[in-house]
Image (cartoon, rainbow, N blue to C red; front, top):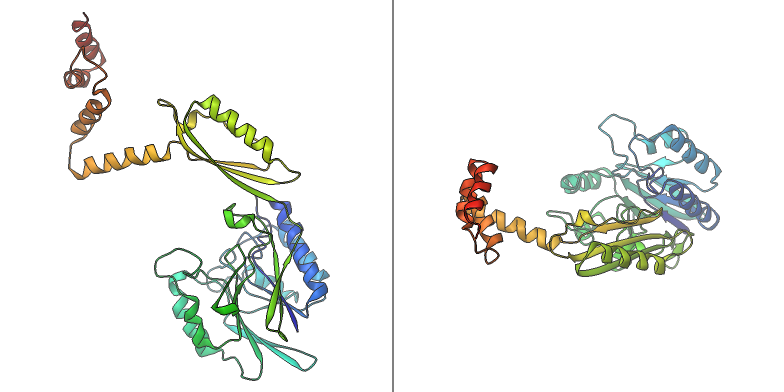
Length: 363
């Protein structure tokens, strides 16, 4: 049997609103032609309460499908207990089967597929939810069993106290499918699969890879990644050293000109330092559709400043002492006509007192 697995379409995502629909439609319509059933892994929508326009587009898409769809909700759709989430709404309309702490069986040509689902729960509740699922749902021995999830796991996401994919092994499913992670991943020797998202959202290095869905063959216990048409995403890092703002802007513009491609999404990450006396905000960055620039210039310098202030505070210096010490450090070796410490003391009395002190030190 051929099983299509799609995740994280984020319909209505504001940054790439049109892409979210065209690329989701490409995945579902292609899967409709190739698969015996379709599994969806959550975050169908980008909002917990989608607009009527977004809901209408989703309803139109699912009405066009001939293939049975089983789905769970993701963290973007999770709502408080008793509140209807937008994936459940499609289930009530008869357009899919929503599985949360529940299961269903699909049969075709004598082959039986058992599908269980656990929609997204907060990370700290994952162990408790998995135990509840284990007590509630038991995969039968005579069927190929699949568990649908939408969770963070420490093998793929950094975070303290996250669950491991190996915590799933006692559940005894043939296959585990997980959403939430927006790039294609695999684990547990191919028993744990993540298809990734169908639309750009986070603009990370991993999202430079193709978008698509998984097509799993239960006869061969293997899968293929089916690429869908999607906008090309280009990510480039630029390192600068003590650059003047006009020089930095010229380098960025030249880089953009080199990278430009039809309909491409481009992200530049600017690192390094500007010339002394300039701030990252002094750089007038190009404003173009489809171009995203992360300005990290002077970040290390700023971090050093923050670390220095933190160190001084830990030494329990007063605000006056802090200011005096910072002034001494900045003026050290730069002036010889007056004493920075005395200047600061006069400035505390007011600007006029400071100016009067400086006048007395003129040669």
